[in-house]
Length: 165
Image (cartoon, helix red, strand yellow):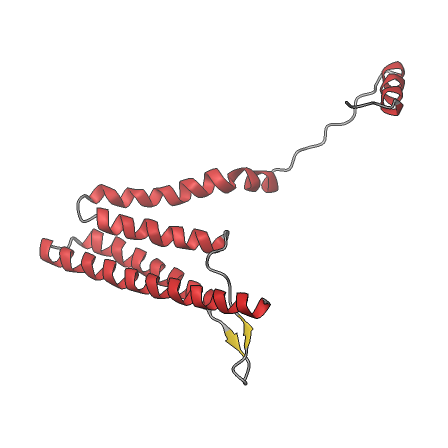
């Protein structure tokens, strides 16, 4: 049964990578075709080349993650990372989708490049509290001297049995 699951992951990963490759090539060819017909401004070319490089990097990493490993007898040893799982892989897919959206929208308006700001904004909103907590841990305040009567009362309350209905 486990082998069937691994084979299914290999097939799904192969189909996802194939779809990504087709989208990557077609969207970028469409962008370049339209831009060459409309006239290409050097700033847009620079932004496009940087984002294309990042797209290619993310795509190659996804291909590496999805790569299945076989032993010399052509028996599946490791199906690779499941590309449908949440986490880093899904963020990589999100980057590709945002990048393609920006490329297509930038054909209509130059302001579309500002959509790339949504990525760091999302990262700050999503991971900012954890990062802040790691960088600036809470300082423990020194315990105040407590009234002995209050402390005894609190200890007695802890010892009482509570019945829940």
